[in-house]
Image (tube, rainbow, N blue to C red; front, side, top):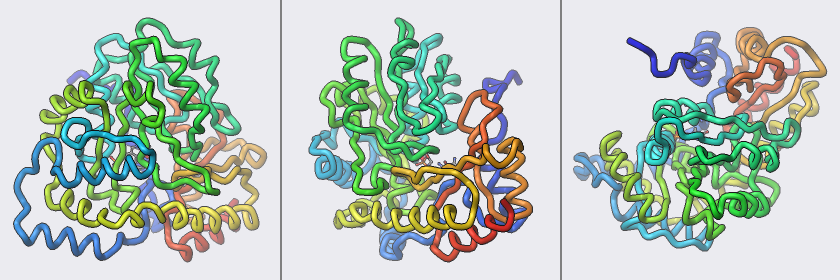
Amino acid sequence: LISKLPAQGTSIFTIMTHLAEEHNAINLAQGFPGFPCDPHLTDLAAHYIKEGNNQYAPSIGIPVLRKRISQMAELMHGVFYKPETEITITSGATEALYVAITAVVKTGDEVIIMEPAYDAYGPSVRLNGGVPVYVPLDENDFSIDWDRLEGVINEKTTLIIVNTPHNPSGYVWKKDDVDHLAKIISDKPIFVISDEVYEHIVFDKKEHYSLMRNPILRDKTFICSSFGKTLHVTGWKIGYCLAPEKMSKEFRKIHQYIAFSTATPLQYAIAAYLDDDSKYLELSAFYQKKRDIFCEGLKAYTPFKFTPAEGSFFQTVSYRHLSTENDFDLAVRLTKKAKVACIPNTAFYKDKSDLKVLRFCFAKDEAELELAISRLSYAV
Ligand code: PMP
Ligand code: GLN
C-alpha cells in the first residue's frame, strides 16, 4: 500500500493520552473536559433513545437542531442562516472541516493555513490533492502577519483556513482581522473555512467576532463548529457547518458519502437542551474561572512565561529561558516524572524544531488544576 499521508504518524493527542494513562498522569494534553456534562443533557439523550429515535437522521440533520443553530447564530452575531438550505449537521467539526475542504480543493490547489495550526487541516488538504501553504503567526502574540499572508496568495490559492478562538494559542480574531481578510480576498475566487469550535469560550469580556459578521465573508465562508466543547460532550461528535446555499449544496453532496448522517438521539437531545440559551451564554465565565486559577498557579509556583489565553480552553507556556530540551522530550518527561501530561507545540507546525512551548488544557475541575500546578512546581 502506498501511503497517502507518508509524513503523518499517530496524532499527538492519541500519543499523549496513552502516555498519560500509562503513567497515571493528569491529562492536560488532549483537549476535553475532565468533568461530566449537565445530567439534564444525558437524561435527554436517554429519553430520546428510549423513545425510539434510533434510526438514520435526515442526512442534513434534524430540522429542529438546524433551527436552533440558526437562532444561536442570530442571537450571537445578528446574522441569519436559513436552516433549510444553509445549515448542515455533521459528525463533529472534524467531519465538517474535511467535507468543506473536499468541496473546494482540487489537485494542485493551494490552501493557506496559519501556523501553529490544529493538526487536521494539513492532512485533509493533502488527501484532496491540495498543497498546504503555511504562514506563521506572530511568535509572541499569535496575531496575523498580513503582509506575509497576502504575499503567498496567487492564482492557485483556493482556500484560506481560519481558526478563532485559536487552538493552541487562544488568540481571538478582532473585527479588524475579519475586515482585513475580507478586503484582501473580496475580488478573488478564494473560499474561507472558519473553524470556530471554541466560539463560546472567550475571556476578559472580549467577544468572539465570527467571520459570518462580515458580509463579504458571509458569502465565501464555511463556518465549522461543534457542540463538543460547548456542551462538554466531545465524545458525542455532533458538529455543524453554516455556509451560503450554493456552498452548502456542494457540502451536503459530499457529506452524504462521508458520514451520510449523524447520531439521531443526540441531535434531539441537544436541540431540546438548547431551548435555554444560558447553556452557552454562560460558558465564557465558567471557563474564565478555570483559566484564572490555572494561570495564577502557573505564575505563583512555576517559572514558565506566558500571556493568559484570550479564548479556548488552552494555555501555552514558554520555557526557552529555562532549558534547551526539545518540547516533545519535556512533555514526555513531565508526564512520566511530574505526572502531568501536556502537548508539545511543535505538533502544531509542519516543520519546527527550535520551539520551546507547551500547551496545557485547563478544562478540568479546580482541584485537579491545583494538583497539576503543585506537581509542576516540583518538577520544573
Ligand atoms: N478544530 C479545533 C480547533 C479543535 O480543537 C478540535 C478539537 N475539538 C476540532 C476542530 C474537532 O472538533 P470535533 O471534536 O467536534 O470533531
Ligand atoms: N481538539 C483537541 C485538542 O486540541 C483534541 C481532538 C483530538 O484528539 N483529535 O487537544
